[in-house]
Image (cartoon, rainbow, N blue to C red; front, side):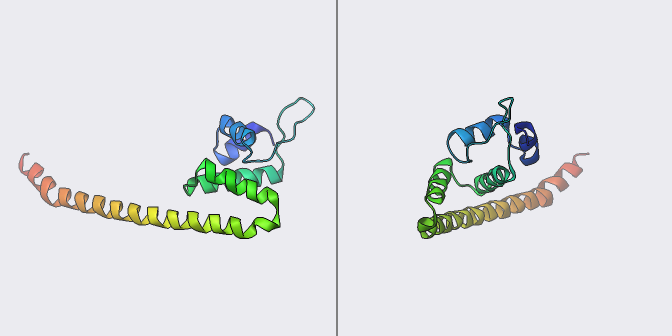
Length: 124
């Protein structure tokens, strides 16, 4: 796949894909005879993984650490699992905070509808 196709498929800019490759988050992408990137299925799996992890809130630094551990092989399985477990804990905490924020917004909207909207109708 070309970089444009991968960019469209995963909704990631071409610049971001180049950046991920440059910093080692995705493996070096092979080039075709014209020198253009030619993404394999395996490359696409890495792009999908990185995008998913970024959506979960993992920082670039954490992902670099994870990929580095992955590249070292099976001896790092426990370290990778520990890293992902810690990230999951952080995501759960953020989700709890977001739930509280959503509940507060819902409350405020309900108050607005119960108090302000009737008063506005009286003005008509």
